[in-house]
Length: 129
Image (cartoon, rainbow, N blue to C red; front, side, top):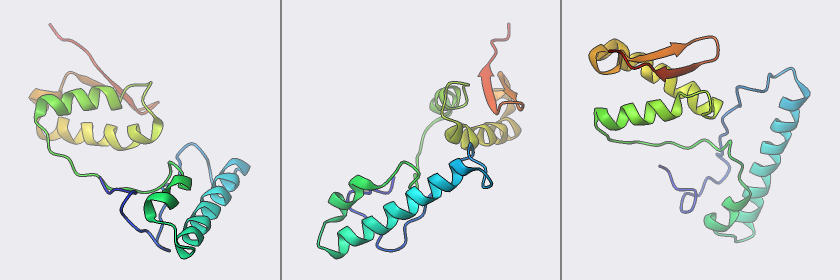
């Protein structure tokens, strides 16, 4: 994962828009104002000599980051079980449910015991006997 400790974003900070706020809502406007202010303050701290490690302390959870991972199918099953559950954060489900569907398409024998509920973007493992 890209480290906010060492990475200097400068003026190129990107944020991931939350799926639970709609652009026409006041909540979205408040979120947008907050991330814009965070980006401006981050840049100001860097300009005043703060290190990226120090300036990152004010960046919100909506900061875009990238992650690359390598794992085996058993671990993918575990990750998907945890991150597609109804109790998982909606934004991780937004990523993991389509990934699960792709695994089901490519390797159905390994992932066919997951049942996806498209009404709430969740999945669960159903043990088949």
